[in-house]
Length: 75
Image (cartoon, rainbow, N blue to C red; front, side):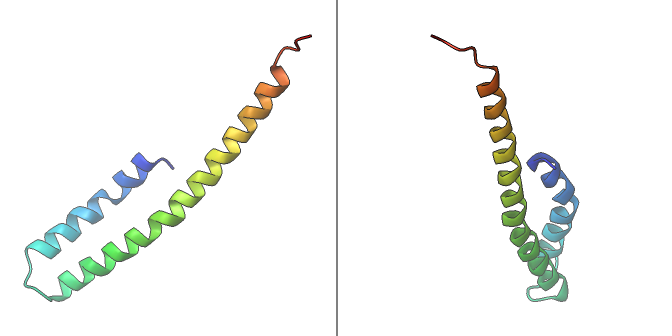
C-alpha cells in the first residue's frame, strides 16, 4: 500500500477525530477517544514505514542484480 493510499484510508477517521476534538467540551469522552485514536494511528506509521522501507530495499536489490547481469562486458 502506498503512502498516499494509507493517508486516504485514514482521512475519514482523521476528520471525525478533528470534529470530535474541536466541537465537544474539553475532557469529554469524545475528546479522549479522539486522542486515543490519534495516538494509535501515529503509532502505526513506524510499522508501515518500516515495511515500506524493506519492500523498497528488496526492489532496489533486485533491480541492481538485473542491471549487473545485463551490463555489457568491457575489455
